[in-house]
Length: 159
Image (cartoon, rainbow, N blue to C red):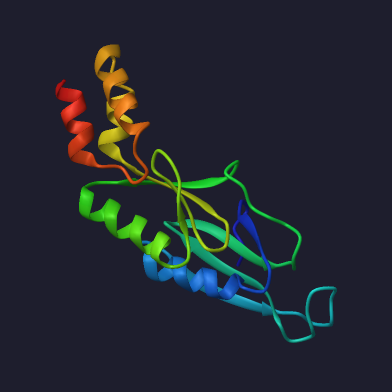
């Protein structure tokens, strides 16, 4: 059953692969039903996987195998709040080592072009610190990182 509010992600024939990767990588994630095309369509044949329902971190999603020509960009991303360096490393490395790529300031992009912010809670708390000097030091430290180094953020907070 599709949720009233569901994120639809466009894929070029790899929606099921992506859904299985997300379910295996992120907690509170799963693959639900799969709908096969009832007839041929511009980028597929009758019986091909057309739609995959899945959850990522409890968020309902639909993967649509809509075909080529649609690309994702950083205007949409999943922001994942991590609790420690081990969790940050595990999620970041899972995405990057599975054909993804690193980006700046906690961002990485999976092999399907979906953007992820693997953002430790300590980082978001530091840059929102009411002491603007503390927030600035944490922010400036983050600006030089790809994957976030929690120890470096904590050192910046301490000054």
